[in-house]
Length: 351
Image 1 (cartoon, rainbow, N blue to C red):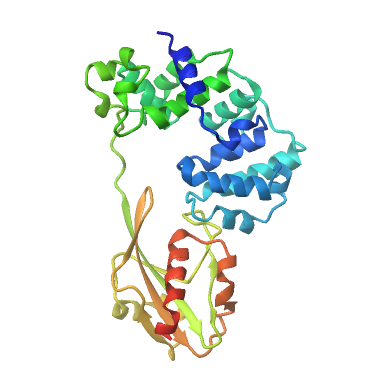
Image 2: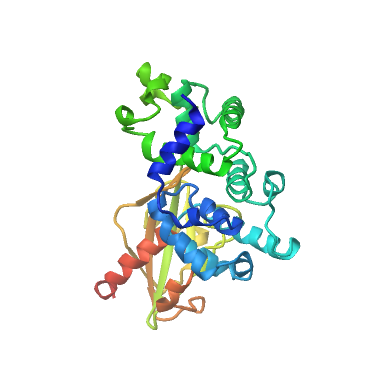
């Protein structure tokens, strides 16, 4: 069996009708690859269509305000992808005169573009023989060749990249790369792969030795951290609130949120009232009401956020300058957006 030919034949028979498959424009291919990192095609499709419509060229994206880019990205998570996308678009537009790099060597120098994305763009758009290695590729190769080297180890990353490069069809690198990625996504799935109707199963060592469920292997993840967030939602009589841009380099950088006090453990109002941060934030004549009796647990890849929203009602507050009805115009996290949706549905009950 010829590995690459079998994959390409399968791909041509089952080729998905995806808009980024109909172009070799490196900007649009790049856009699709960044959106689809950590995101399923079914979820990413609407974002790709929206971005490619509002920002049809790299110059259009470069000229956009960051807040607009982040607002359009809202709901996808991993917001550093959007910030890097915008940064690199501006770099290409200004420093490279709008000309997209055409080689792996030049592409990987760009912010937010790693080995996988550089390989995908250079092979699909410019026929450079650079093999892609993503989660789907790791899975296919680990199972077919029965490789138990952890895919998230330094040794594993080098081993799988070398193997992927050796299997690449140098005459059709773009088609082959898309074929192996699709094969992992649709056929050799993480759970319940359809091995009995797989064109590769007769030569798949994991299938032969009944090790499909055990592969690929990952090293144990780092312990997930717990954080405790208390958001203070001010609402004055004239429906004004405080909504501020999150600074720093942590999660949700550049997104907007209500004033936040982070604590080392889940806390109650009595504990908060005695803190200097609370006293500096909340006026003495305000009334305070907990919106959610139990903490909302918002799970991110590396941390779990235990969140409470405290409603602060006051007649007037100088720091509250944002109209409540305009909050939807600001880019924010899914956690805040979900809260606002629920709060708005209960507004009349609360006030």
